[in-house]
Every structure is written in structure tokens, then in C-alpha cells.
Length: 264
Ligand code: HEM
Image 1: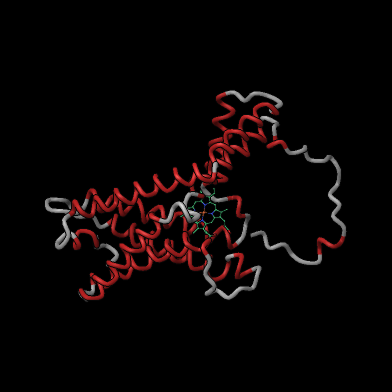
Image 2: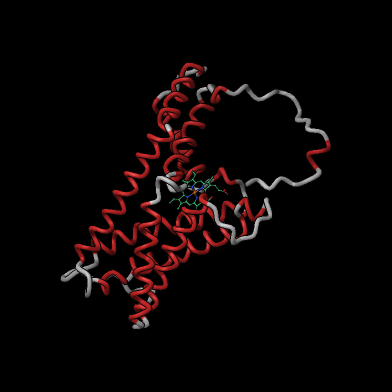
């Protein structure tokens, strides 16, 4: 199963062009959903106004080399390892899910456009990347959703309570889970079950990509932008219009030791 391209078997009944058009339609949905969300939530207006204010408050102007170095450091440290989530389980679960999803999506595009259809070569490595990506997404995603999500970990709600904010994580998990089940039943030659999970796989993809406007999907674009702006603001001294750190010992009183912070 791990080394079989499920899309090339599907191409025996559905034309490869139809599968490719479906992938392109999903990419178009991401762009449309994100742009409408940006217009509606005015994120870009806020972002640029903030950048303008920061420029005025800057204590010094950064050169190209310094700016590039801040951006590269942010990409390598803050973005690639989601440093914002601290050094705990939350970060491990997110990194697993994030890289799993990236592998799953990149491998899907490679399999559909380069290895599916008559006369195309067979790859064993890309199907493996696709399956490993889906498994990593499930491990990180279910771990987060069942045990680490704020509602469950800190607010003591039962794990099965579902709210609108869960749309992204649940649709993502549905894609990875039904994709794996589809591939499994296809390689086990249980065609009825394989078609059932194919329909569920297609539906979850439509929900995930069609729901970008309503879900947290676009955080994967906003968060890196915000991290870069924050680090540039620290380097040029504007500090996002916040006061400078006090040059004095921290004194929070004994109350702060009563309960360990959960850092969600
Ligand atoms: C392919 C890229 C990514 C995927 C698939 C992904 C996936 C997820 C998922 C499933 C959640 C849980 C959503 C929820 O609260 O229900 C989440 C939350 C979060 N993500 Fe991402 N993410 C990606 C990229 C990023 C990046 C680049 C950053 C930061 C630089 C980031 C920072 C966060 C933060 C801070 C949270 C909140 C976590 C919490 O509530 O504990 N993510 N992400």
C-alpha cells in the first residue's frame, strides 16, 4: 500500500485530466477564500497600518543585509519550528501535523501531475511520502484535537464537543484519514469500500478548501507574516509601539507560583 500511487489506480476509471482539474480547483479555492477573508477581516489594512506606525517609531533604519538576516532567522527558527508554541507537546504535535500536511500536499501534486495517466512513469518514493505525510498529519492532528486543544486541556470540555473553530483541524484530519483508508481498501482490492472512502476523501477536501474563509486555514500565511513583522520591529527598535522592557528584577509576588501556566 505505502508504495502504490492511489491516483494512478483511480485513473483507470476517472480521467487523469479530471483529477488534475480537481486539484487546480482546490488551489483556486485557497486563493479565493484567503483573499475574501483578508478583505472582510481587513487583515491587510491592519498589517500595513501597523507597519507604517512601526516605521515612524523605529529608532534606526535596517539595511538590506540586516533585514534579510532577521527574515532568514525568523523563517528558520520561528516559522519552521513554530517557536511561538513554546517547548512542549503542543509544539511537537503542531510540527508533526504541519510537516505531515506539507508532505501530503506536495506529494499529492507530484503524484497527480507527474505520475498519473497513460505513459507516465511509476514512482515508489512519492507514494511513500504521500502516505507518511498523511500518517504524520493524523498523529499530530488527533493528538492536538483530542488532548491538547484549549477547550479540552484547560477548559475541561469533553473531547467530542465540536465548535466552528474546529472546522480546519477536523477537515484536515478527515482528508488525511479518509485518504489513507481509500488507499488501504484500494490496495486490498475491496472496491466497494475503496469507492466509499474516495467519496469521503473528495468531500473532506471540498470542505477543507471550500471552508478557508470560515476556518483557521489561512493562519499558515498570516502567522509567518506576523512573526517577520514582530522580529523586524524588535530589530529596528519600534517594538510594535510597546514600551521598552524595564531594567529591573521581575517581581510578580508569590501568587504566580500557585498554579503552573499551561501556555496554550
Ligand atoms: C501547512 C502549514 C500548517 C498547518 C497544516 C497547520 C495546522 C494547524 C492546526 C491543525 C492547528 C490547530 C487549529 C485549531 O486551533 O483548531 C494549528 C494551530 C496553530 N498554528 Fe498552525 N499550521 C500550519 C502552519 C503554521 C505556521 C507556519 C505557524 C506559525 C509560524 C503556525 C502556528 C500555529 C499556532 C500558533 C496555532 C495555535 C495552536 C494552539 O492553539 O495550540 N501554524 N495549526
